[in-house]
Length: 209
Image (cartoon, rainbow, N blue to C red):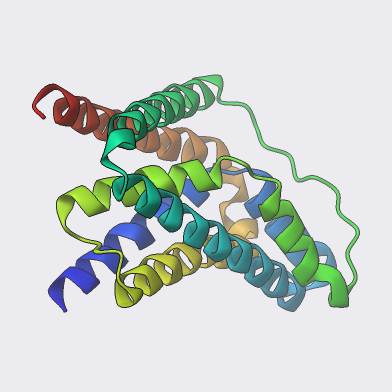
């Protein structure tokens, strides 16, 4: 039971931090909330989170397949290094730029807000490799065992972590808007540091196998 709690909070935190920096999904959630009402923003957020859960589920099985085929574990580790290096550099550059994020104009009706969220989340092709990399690390740490309970926990945590951020953007963005630059910069530096840490851990695994 303890490892389930650790798995949930570790995955929830990773999903939360990955969604915090202002971007297409959370800024659209804020925009929809302002223009169409908070309920529409929540429905949109549910659509995004649902797709994130599907992508996290796919990521688990990619990692599961690779780990059950020992000959490709080294390939997985090298891919993980590339992924973490990319995200570390990406978040650092974004933090350095310190540009204001403007809300993108959207035109949604209440009934298609959910599917709009699903579609926009599906367009983010980096989600699956991100969660594949995390899943590989959690597996090595013994937090996930590729059993139904663990997989469900991982997927639900990814979805709820994402939804929690979108919910905050939906209801509180108007109060945080004047602090967006500093908020974005700091969160991106934190994410860059976390990706660098994961990169170092993965490198150590390769060197001391």
